[in-house]
Image (cartoon, rainbow, N blue to C red):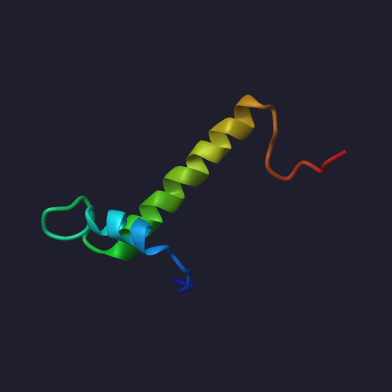
Length: 60
């Protein structure tokens, strides 16, 4: 698995941390960020599908 480094505004990180830990939905920040990326990419794929855009198509 690759590692990446990103800068995240403190307010966004604070919000993320509310969902991490024993009382949260995620075990750690990495799990939360991976889930968020997956969900965002799934939504973008759905939008592309509705708009008739397919991955790999060349722009004309």
